[in-house]
Image (cartoon, rainbow, N blue to C red):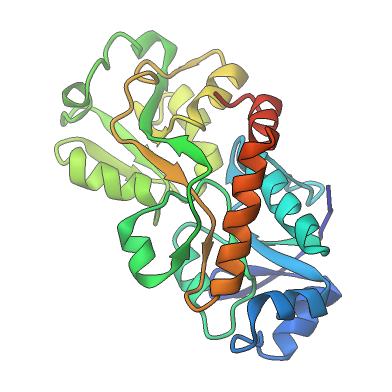
Length: 271
């Protein structure tokens, strides 16, 4: 697993690495018009954007700068198949789309719990899905019997907390108009805030919820087997990188066929 140190500087929503690989590329303006794979091979590294706040898919340890998770392992396999190393650049959910579409992009692709949607595919390119996902909730263990359906959550006396800018917030605003919506900037802090009674429900995903239930006995995911939505997670990138998109899809297909994706799911406790 590669380790990186982040600078506090921000360009759009991206925290830049001290890596010579990344900084040299940005000094050249990101070379957005050059064929993607040629650009990456010449550079010697695949620059991967990720939020680093979504267990067990993508996590950046704030103390060490180390990246880990199911999607991080997938990105490293993609880079290895290309004959380069993976370097990770921190982005955020509110700025993800802008960072991907920037005229001077700080990374080649983004990964880590990004759901494949028609809206994203209209403006950006997305790989084939490689992990099933869907919306569910976290709540306090003692409240597990209280929330048995969406209607039980969509009430004025229920405080629903979400992270900003992503599909969790979009879902909550569309499907829970009567609940009290609380937007909190750090996704990884929300489960503890629910456990502490600062909110009643967290809108999350079926791949994230079990990790927090295992990690915190005060939390429950009572609707895990009945997700509100069904979708798949994919790799996001700028349009016009057809060679990179085809390469990523080919690697994902081979990882599925040879059992690598199944092994990585087991490693990270995914179903």
